[in-house]
Image (cartoon, rainbow, N blue to C red; front, side):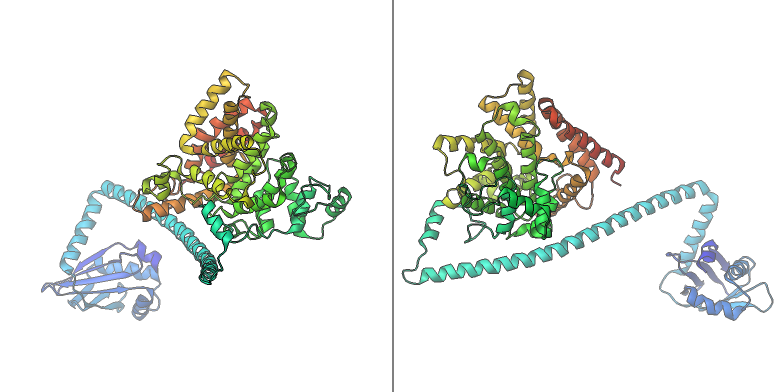
Length: 596
């Protein structure tokens, strides 16, 4: 019926009873509309869908199909065979003797005469100005296509928002559970203090020394499996009686060989496979996180049994020999890694898994990239570099410096709008390290500790993207003047560039790893855009989920930030040039998948 209805033009007739009648397709193109307007101003109308029209057609003649029915309807209007003495009843006589259709109409509040006249004028205009009508039709079709695209985008956004709402509800449930646990702990402490003479002197002493909240609460470290730690440690140390075994005693070489020949535990095998790739560019922290915590998203807020950052840091301290060279206490190391990992929030992107990834890439640049050899680096510099990489986004809230400054948050005021987050990352860690249980550098001489701290501070502050141009220009100038950067300031600049490269290295990673990080950064950007909207602030570029622009943002970022910096670093470290090639390949993907 609909296909024939759509072919039928608007029909007009004037009956002997001085009633004007019009039959046409309804606005939604789903029904036949008949309107009758009497000379007295009375208007009646009816809208009939296929179910309503079928009995009328059948009553007229059971031989009529829909094509013939609408042909007869047109003929009756065009040849004066429409009878209507009362606007409530319209009769259309067909060409075959005795066949007719009776339409029962109902009173309408519309001005029928005006409606019919406007329709007649529109019909006349369409016949006398076909080009203008065709142009209007093209514009209408174009607008319809735009509306359909917008509708499709809104449907996608709805799905995304529903997923975010679901995830937020799950996160809220976790947070409520953590809040209840913290409230119970607080009530317990208050009850102890109320009891006469039952003050916890250790807590009072820690509160006086450290002004940063301990992310571990009352604990000193996480409940990481000693068997997993033993497996990782044994990959680099095979002396069970050595001086660095206060937490875990490693296996002997023969025990380790036997253990890793045939695994009877899937988690151990997956962890071992991850550790074997510490020196490879495709080291996969996603797999490591899933191995340790079960997934690479929901676990990031708690990680009671340790995650990718814990294991990556623990492994690298032994692999690089820093544990042995600086005689680090293993229990303090475990405490420190635990509190650093716990201090990262479960953000989509700036989380402990990102820190583990940056730590690995920084290690790669130092070793396989050739930076240690090129700068003739000291062990103190290597320790500072890995330390800085591990903490570089500590306590990151998932919003950038621009948001803090525009919203004038407490941190923006505290740090005078200057490298707000970077100052927070490094200062919060060193505040926690005032506590002996977390003081990783406690065994060093004062001059040595100060030197390492200064390098760490400079490296972390350099990760402020607001200062990116300044650091890159300074770096290009220095390597153009002299490729020998063994002076302390030059070496710190080189280390800062290594950390900066590691921080944005996703663009230069294998495509599958890059795409996973790209999805996470987009998720976090859109969440900031939501916050900006709630604060009444203008939404930052590429952070409006209603106007997604991932390909444009990624291509621009690679063109103006990543490639120029990677090329300048590759000029100094030729073994890192492959990262430029990876970046170009990932950029090509977005060139072929432009935003709609």
